[in-house]
Image (cartoon, rainbow, N blue to C red; front, side, top):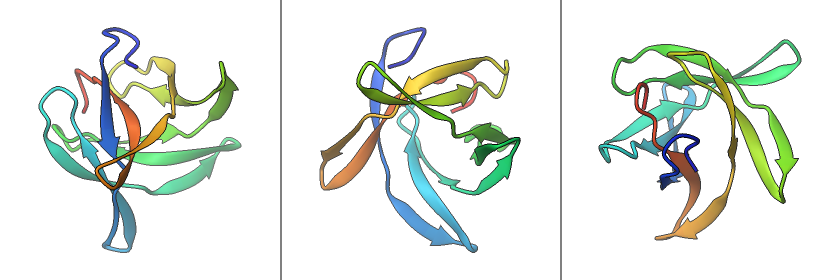
Amino acid sequence: MAATSGIVAWRPRVVLLHGGHEWYCCMAATSGIVAWRPRVVLLRGGHEWYCYVAATSGIVTWRPRVVLLRGGHEWYCYVAATSGIVTWRPRVVLLRGGHECGEGHRITAAV
Protein backbone atom coordinates (compact mmCIF):
# COMPACT_ATOMS: atom_id res chain seq x y z
CA MET A 1 0.00 0.00 0.00
CA ALA A 2 1.33 3.43 -0.88
CA ALA A 3 2.40 5.39 2.19
CA THR A 4 0.89 8.65 0.95
CA SER A 5 -2.26 7.73 -0.97
CA GLY A 6 -3.05 4.24 0.33
CA ILE A 7 -3.67 3.09 -3.26
CA VAL A 8 -2.67 -0.51 -3.97
CA ALA A 9 -1.93 -1.91 -7.41
CA TRP A 10 -0.88 -5.42 -8.35
CA ARG A 11 2.05 -5.87 -10.69
CA PRO A 12 2.89 -9.06 -12.57
CA ARG A 13 6.21 -10.69 -11.77
CA VAL A 14 6.93 -12.00 -15.24
CA VAL A 15 10.58 -12.59 -16.06
CA LEU A 16 12.50 -12.85 -19.32
CA LEU A 17 16.14 -12.92 -20.30
CA HIS A 18 17.46 -10.05 -22.44
CA GLY A 19 21.01 -8.93 -23.01
CA GLY A 20 22.31 -11.35 -20.41
CA HIS A 21 20.11 -9.88 -17.66
CA GLU A 22 16.92 -11.05 -16.01
CA TRP A 23 14.10 -8.53 -16.53
CA TYR A 24 10.71 -8.20 -14.89
CA CYS A 25 7.46 -6.65 -16.04
CA CYS A 26 6.39 -3.53 -14.13
CA MET A 27 3.06 -1.80 -14.63
CA ALA A 28 2.75 1.83 -13.57
CA ALA A 29 -0.13 2.27 -11.11
CA THR A 30 -0.97 5.75 -12.39
CA SER A 31 -0.80 5.29 -16.16
CA GLY A 32 -1.02 1.51 -16.57
CA ILE A 33 2.05 1.64 -18.84
CA VAL A 34 4.01 -1.61 -18.81
CA ALA A 35 7.80 -1.48 -18.88
CA TRP A 36 10.52 -4.09 -18.52
CA ARG A 37 13.10 -3.44 -15.82
CA PRO A 38 16.37 -5.27 -15.20
CA ARG A 39 16.77 -7.43 -12.10
CA VAL A 40 20.48 -6.85 -11.64
CA VAL A 41 21.83 -7.40 -8.14
CA LEU A 42 25.07 -6.42 -6.44
CA LEU A 43 26.37 -6.49 -2.90
CA ARG A 44 27.34 -3.19 -1.26
CA GLY A 45 27.72 -2.28 2.38
CA GLY A 46 26.54 -5.69 3.50
CA HIS A 47 23.22 -5.32 1.66
CA GLU A 48 21.91 -6.71 -1.59
CA TRP A 49 21.08 -3.91 -4.04
CA TYR A 50 19.13 -4.01 -7.29
CA CYS A 51 19.19 -1.88 -10.41
CA TYR A 52 16.13 0.35 -10.86
CA VAL A 53 15.40 2.05 -14.17
CA ALA A 54 12.83 4.87 -14.14
CA ALA A 55 10.36 4.24 -16.97
CA THR A 56 9.78 7.94 -17.61
CA SER A 57 13.34 9.30 -17.49
CA GLY A 58 15.43 6.16 -17.99
CA ILE A 59 17.58 7.16 -15.00
CA VAL A 60 19.26 4.20 -13.33
CA THR A 61 19.64 4.02 -9.56
CA TRP A 62 20.65 1.27 -7.15
CA ARG A 63 18.19 0.43 -4.38
CA PRO A 64 18.67 -1.84 -1.38
CA ARG A 65 16.80 -5.12 -1.13
CA VAL A 66 16.56 -5.17 2.64
CA VAL A 67 13.82 -7.33 4.11
CA LEU A 68 12.25 -7.52 7.54
CA LEU A 69 9.22 -9.16 9.08
CA ARG A 70 6.54 -6.92 10.60
CA GLY A 71 2.89 -7.57 11.32
CA GLY A 72 3.02 -11.01 9.77
CA HIS A 73 4.20 -9.67 6.41
CA GLU A 74 7.56 -9.50 4.70
CA TRP A 75 8.61 -5.90 4.07
CA TYR A 76 11.36 -4.41 1.93
CA CYS A 77 13.27 -1.16 2.07
CA TYR A 78 12.35 1.33 -0.67
CA VAL A 79 14.46 4.37 -1.46
CA ALA A 80 12.78 7.13 -3.49
CA ALA A 81 14.98 8.04 -6.47
CA THR A 82 14.04 11.72 -6.40
CA SER A 83 14.08 12.49 -2.68
CA GLY A 84 16.16 9.67 -1.23
CA ILE A 85 13.47 9.09 1.40
CA VAL A 86 13.43 5.53 2.73
CA THR A 87 10.16 3.74 3.42
CA TRP A 88 9.22 0.13 4.16
CA ARG A 89 6.77 -1.54 1.80
CA PRO A 90 5.09 -4.94 2.06
CA ARG A 91 6.08 -7.79 -0.26
CA VAL A 92 2.67 -9.40 -0.61
CA VAL A 93 2.21 -11.95 -3.36
CA LEU A 94 -0.89 -13.41 -4.98
CA LEU A 95 -1.75 -15.39 -8.07
CA ARG A 96 -3.93 -13.65 -10.63
CA GLY A 97 -4.51 -14.49 -14.26
CA GLY A 98 -1.95 -17.25 -14.12
CA HIS A 99 0.81 -14.92 -12.97
CA GLU A 100 2.46 -14.28 -9.63
CA CYS A 101 1.92 -10.64 -8.78
CA GLY A 102 3.62 -8.40 -6.25
CA GLU A 103 1.90 -5.56 -4.45
CA GLY A 104 2.72 -2.35 -6.30
CA HIS A 105 2.47 1.25 -5.26
CA ARG A 106 1.61 4.56 -6.81
CA ILE A 107 4.87 6.36 -7.53
CA THR A 108 4.43 9.92 -8.69
CA ALA A 109 7.97 10.97 -9.64
CA ALA A 110 9.67 7.81 -10.87
CA VAL A 111 7.51 4.92 -11.99
